[in-house]
Length: 574
Image 1 (cartoon, rainbow, N blue to C red):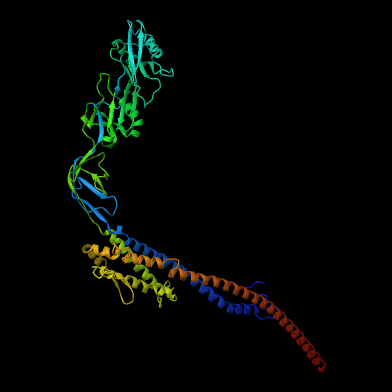
Image 2 (tube, helix red, strand yellow):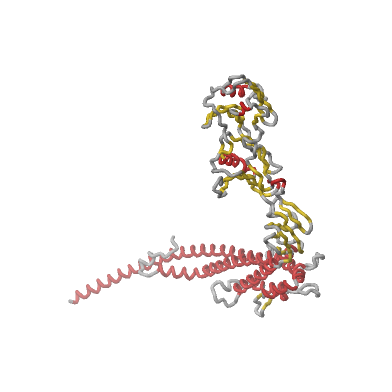
């Protein structure tokens, strides 16, 4: 049967029995509502206690930081002449204090090569031969000749030709030469007929190009001028970046422009730490130059080039930085000792604990001094954490709350006592009566008679400036005696116990959760009993309604009978 308002009850008796039943039930629900309100409060208290425990764990972490010796080794680094050298600490602590004299004799530089000027990026870097031939069938030789083509490191290819040979005959003879085969019988070089604007010639190129192998093709010394006038090999040169990298071979076919040379080099060069470019110098005549530049500085990135020559045997590029063996390394003298390094930035292996950035030539001094800013931050984190926690506890335990979130824990005695424990903990003094700093009160702590905690940061600054060793000894204690613990270790241990599984917050929260579980059971059982009670009462009220209805019907019947008798008697008298 529904436990809500039973609107049909009382219809027969014309009495409001349904509302009466609801009113009675609301009265009986009051004890359950008080239990539900109590449960809601306990749940809010448990959440608040959990939050307080987490807040105190943060304070514990701050106290633990103060118990570490590394917290007192902060250093600041400065350079007397930043235009010469700047320095920074690799770690924030532990570097030996002192001054270091530094002289930068030379900055590290990138390896750089540059060409002569040319008209535009499309200017020819390796011109093709100009011949008087127009067809592969043109007669190329007036007399018999023999010559040798050099391939790679040391592979001669001997060629013999008869008088009257055409360009095609010469190309075929080179391609079919017995010496023009590798160990697998495949050709080493190919001779191709090239027809250009300035005439037809024979181009020699590697049959199977491989940038990792020396495939340079040369017409050896003694080759007849007649052959040189129409046979032209690809220009193959080698570059290498540094001593550790493998060489890379680049081949350019006759007629290649400077832009094509740049593109060919950059297709592989960037992976090896080198970049080619065409720059605009601005001169009215031949304003463009080609450059090769290493990505990084120092001798470890020196660019070496072999074989990049024009038809006259002249180098196409000239070394600009590092020329004639001039070192590309940075040169510096630190405290009278000379060093060379490949780079100017992040030199971290000269002064222990420091990274140097060289910015210019000259002299400078780098100073390493104690820095208490991080220590100050650690102390303030601890103190401010304590103050915030204490204020939170005071707000939740006030006996005269003025706002909704106040006084939630005023009936939890274990929490009300926390502030007194904190005050006792903060008031600890050092075990050594000779210490210059014996308590937090010497650093700026104050506690008024109501238990409110405050802190004077200016006083802490003064103490850290005048007596940093005293601050260190107060927090760390006697570092040579494990039993002589300082304030930080003692406090960290105490806070660890307070926030542990056996600490006051966890025990109080567990107790509340147990009470919540008991209330859950009690509320559930009470509701069930109440539902059963009112199911029975509803049935009883229905029976009562029926009985009253029956009595009402009988009364109506009797009234009707009496009215009939009265009417009959009246009629007889008339």
